[in-house]
Amino acid sequence: MELFDDEKRMLDGQRGEPVARALNFLVQFGDAFGAERFVDVIYAHYPAEMSIYRGQVEDAVEYADTGARVCIPTTTSTLACDLEQWRDYGCPEPIYELQRQVVAAHRKMGVLGTYTCTPQLLGFVPPKGSYIISVESSAIIYYNSVLGARTNRGGLFTRYSAVTGKYPLMGYLLDENRRGTHLFKLDLGPDDLRHDCDYSALGFHVGGIVGSEVPVFDALPPGTTQDNLITLGAALATSGSVTLFHAPGHTAEADTVKQAFQGTPPKETQTVGPTDLRAAVDKLTTIAPGDPVDFVTLGCPHYTLEQIRRVAAWFRQHSATVRDGVRLWVCTNRMTKRAADWEGLTQTIEAAGGLLICDTCPVECHMRTSTCKEFGLQTPQVAAMVADSCKMLRYVGDLIGCKTALCSREECLRTATFGRLA
Image 1 (tube, rainbow, N blue to C red):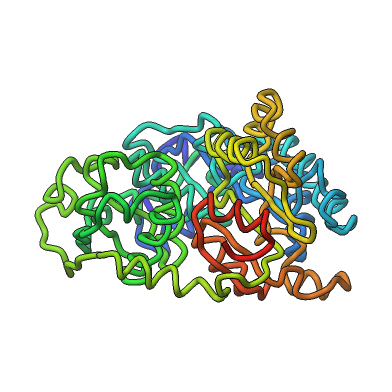
Image 2: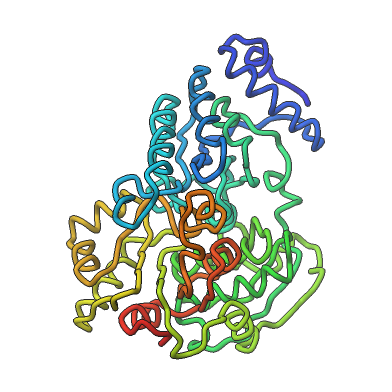
C-alpha cells in the first residue's frame, strides 16, 4: 500500500504505540486485499464485546489499558444484557458483572456507550459519499444503501480504524463494487407491503437469492418509510450477507434503475409477488394458529420512538394486558427509552405487563442455548416466540431453539394478550 506522510509518521510511532500497532494491522489487512491506499474515515460503529462470548470483555479491557483512544466519533453495538434491568428478566449476575466492565473500558477509550444496532436513530448520520467503518449488519446496510455512506463489514478492524481514522480503500468503498447485480421487479399490491413484517419478508426472500451481491428493487411503494427500510435491510443481511441494496426513489445513490446498474446489465431479473412473501413467512413460521406462545419480541432492529408509541397506543386502545406466562419484550436503545419514559410510554407498556428492554435483545443475551448450559439454566429458555422481524426469528430458531412465527406488530400484541398465536 502507498502510505502518505501522516500515515508514515503514525506507523513510526509518532502518535504513540497503540496507533502504530493499529495502523500496522490495517496495512497488513489492506495488502492482503490489494488496496492501493488508505482513506480517512469520519465515524465508526464499534463492536460491543459481549460477555456471552468467552474472552471478549477481557480483551476489551486489556486493549483500553494499552492507552488506545478513538480519534473519530465512535458508537457501540449491542451488549449481552440490559445494564439497568438485568435482574428483572433473569439475567445471571456473572453475565452482568462481566459485561459492565466493558462500559468503563469504552469510556476510557472515548467510545460512546450507545449499545444499539440502530445508531442512525441517535443522530449518527454520515453524509452521502463519506467513508465510515461499522459492525452490525443492519446498520451497515442502512448506511450504505439509504444514506449512501461507504462501509464494509468492519469486524475487529473497526477497532483499529476508530483509533487511527484510517481504512484501506477496497470493497464497498469503491464505485465499481457498488453497482447493482440483480433486478427485482415488484408485482405487489398496496395490501402486500403494509407492515414492517411484510418488508422483512421481502428482504428475507431476496437476500436468500442474491447472497452477498447487490439487489436493485423496482419499485418500492411511494409510502415506504424509514422503519420499513431498516427492516428490509436487516432481513436482506440475514438470509444473505447483503451489504448494499438500491431502491430508486428511496435510497441515496441511484435515481433510476439504470443508474443503479452503472451501465451494466443485471445478472438476473426476477419478479417478486405475494406468493414469494408468503413463502418467506411460512419458512419462519413453525407455530400453528391457536398454539401456545410464551415470548413475543418487538424491536429487531431496535425500535424507534414512533414504533414504541404505537405499541403503547395499542394497549391503551384495547385496554389489554399481557397474559400470564407470556413475556413481551420491546427492544430499543437507552436514549430512545429515556424519551419513552418522558412521554409515559414505558409506563403504559410496563403496566400492561411488557418490558421496554435496552442495550440487548433475546438473541444476544443469556437465553442462548450455549449460555444456558454454561450457567445451568433451563433449555430452551423459550418454547415459542412470535416477532415482526425475520432477522430475530432466523437467529432465535438456531440459537435459542424455539418454535417461531412471523406476524405484524398488531398480531404480535394480540398474541401476547391471548397467549396463543393470533
